[in-house]
Length: 273
Image (cartoon, rainbow, N blue to C red; front, top):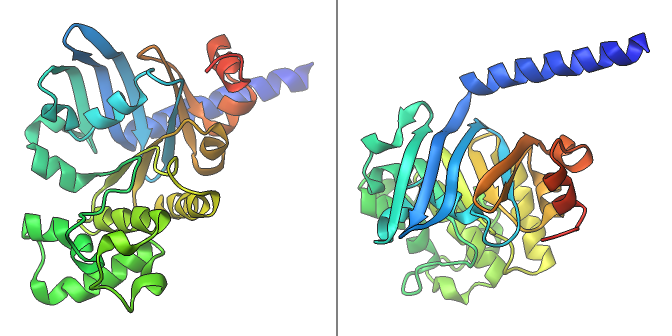
C-alpha cells in the first residue's frame, strides 16, 4: 500500500515538473483561442502549450476543430472572409499579432493533406520558391540549399539526376516529400502538418512518418491526424479535440493507455468517431 502511494506521489511530482518545463519551453501557447465562421464556432477557448522540439498530434473525429486550430497558428484564417479569431497565440514567446502573414509563415511552415507542388515549376524551383519570394538567400547559394533540403527530406538520391524536370513528374509520396523540402528550405521554427499521409500509400506514408520522427531535433511539429496508430508512433504529446473543445492534452503514451477523460477513452477505443 505504501509503495502504491509513493508511486502515485512520484508520478504527480513528475507531472508537476514536466508542466513547469513545458511553461518555460513552449513553442506555441494559445490563450482562450476561438475561431468563428460567421456565427458558427470552429474552436472555442483553446488553452494549449506545445513544447519545443517535440511532435504533438491533434486527434479527434471529423469536424471537431483540429484543422481550424492548426490553421490559426500561421494566420491562414486571414484568407477566409467569414473567419473571426479571438484570444491570443504566442510563437516562441512572441504574440503572433506582431507579424504579418508572410513573416509568420517563415517561422511557421505548413504541409497540407494533398501534395501541392507548384505545377509549372521544376523540382529545383519548387525547393527554392519560398526563398525567392522572401529574397532571403543569394542565388549562388541555391544549389547547396536545394541539395541540403532534399537530403533532409529524404528525396535527394531519388531526384538528384532530374532536378530540372517538372515536380508533377514525381509520385504522390515524392511530391509530399518535395513539399516538405520546400517548407524547411526557409528555415522555419515550427512545422504544421494537416493529415500529411492520408493521400499516400503505406510505403510513402512510412517514409513521411520517419521524417517526422527525425525532424523534432530541428523543429517543433504539430500534426493533425485521423490515424491514431500514426499518432501513437510519431508523437510525444497528444491533444484530443471534440466539438471544438480541447478535451485532454497529455503524453501520448498516457493518452492511449490511461486517458484521464471518459470521452477520450471512448474515442480511442472506437466507441465513436
